[in-house]
Image (cartoon, helix red, strand yellow):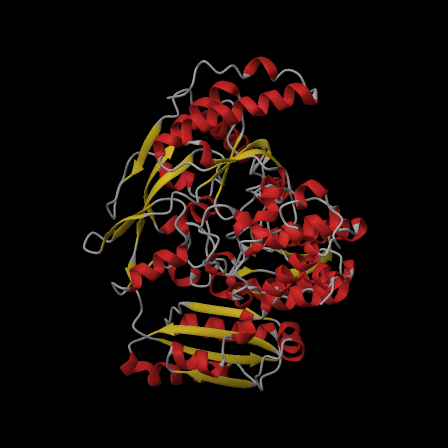
Amino acid sequence: MSLEFVLKEVSRCSFCGFCEHVCPTLVRYTRHFGPRGRIQTILFALKNNLATEKSIEGLYTCLTCNACRIQCPGDIKIAEVVREFRNSLRRGEVDIDEKVLKEVR
Amino acid sequence: MIPDNIQINQYKISNSSYFRVIFVKNIVKALKKIVGKNNVLTDELILALYSKNAIGSSGKALCVVFPENSTHISEIVRLCYKENIKIYPQGSATELSGSSTPHDGIVMSFSKMNKIEEINIVDGYVCVQPGVRIHELNDVLSEYGYMFPVDPASGKSATIGGAINTGAGGLRGARYGTMTDWVLGLEVVIPDENGTLLKLGNNTLKCRQGYDLVRLIVGSEGTLAIVTRAFLKITPAPENIVVVTSFFNSPEDAMKAIGEIKKRRMLPAMMEFIDEDVVRMGKEIIDVKTEGEGHMLIVGQECPPELAEKCAEKLVNIMKGADATYIDFALSESEAENKGLINLRRAFYPLAINLGSKEFGESITLVLIEDFVVPVSKLPEAVRIVKEAGKKYGFMVLTGGHVGDGNLHPMIWTDVENKEMMEKAEKFYLEIMERIIEIGGSISAEHGIGEMKREGLKLELRKRGSEKALDIMKQIKEVWDPKSILNPNKVV
């Protein structure tokens, strides 16, 4: 899997929110701890080079359990995308602010 | 209590970023005093997640606040009224009209007000907080053999508060109606200097309390008051549902079947239509298996298990009489699931996403779902109208909807980054709104007006010679929200 694939997948998200109710880490409260938020966080990072420590934090709470994928009308491979994006961050392949990434690396 | 010692207003007159930062900082400080520091979010990217919706529009939020009870809401409203800060109430932001998009104000999220407070089978109601998801409520009610029948497609994510404010409907609308029919009473906070809490309606099945303010709030899209608690009517869940799917050469033939069902005094819980393009591409692209071809009608009729065969036979005969080219049926919902009878209907939305992403690759694909209602007898004409408009503007249009109540949801997909295509999409929707009004329809059945259909609402009222109604609506808004701080510039 490549970052091109990740971008193609996250670009398909229509923000419908159908994925959220099954996410064990959303804990119902804040959107960045759920699949819809994570997809958008990756989209912000890859399309606009935008990320914050808090938004990235949401990506690292994903259990990659895949519960969301069954719910997604677009069949976006959410868990795989999150896993690949985290790997890319670690490898320094994503162009975002170093300060944001200090904890990740 | 509201921290009176915090001075906010003095900074607001300046637009310079320095003073703006101080202004926002002070709002946040005041809000944290009310709801606690963990209940206010300010991270810019997290705010962006609360500033988007499923139709591709986005705005800007100053912060997101998570009240935990009606006292919190009342105090927040008091603060915002005093300081002229806009409030944008938000459920799960699954709406499709732009009603939840914030513009330079605070987003009020109800995800921490998610309790089912009371279930009363004998008196026939439940009392819930606005952040409860419809699906969760039905999960709990199923233990009692009861249900809350309003079932929008987003029901697993959609919240009660959002559904009330949207005036949501769903698949079972023809039999069970929309939210308007199921809200008995509401507790709301109104945007005045005290953040006054009002109890409107009651938890009784009947209530005449002067002008019906409960039903004014239902469908008001968060523009008049903030719902803090709802008393909802509930109903016994059906024992069994017979499902019949049939395929027709034309929408007119499908319409014949719908007419005959009505003449035979049947009132199906579900009557769904999808056009021949959805059927063809659903089979090709997302591999839904059925031998049927053409336009599809799915009918779900409630009936006791012992009468299921008779009921199915009656429906099958109706379909045959309407020249159905292929018919299948199941005597129960579980059999329908096993046979995959409803899979093509379920493929409606995923198919559009799938086709859109195939067409636009890495561009952000936007699936636009229209929502209008026509007299049931005008459905074939409505299908023709949207298909013709699609051809004119170069869009493939997928059509489906809840035809038992005349509600269609034509769908197109566009590339958000392609300005020309987005403009064409707008023209396409304006044209079909105009023509739908001409054949006696209405521009929104269950998604609401929000930001997207304000022009459509004006158009509809103008065409009916009722522009004055819009003035009355504006006056109503002013009475409830004199400073226009509650979800401003939506609906009217």
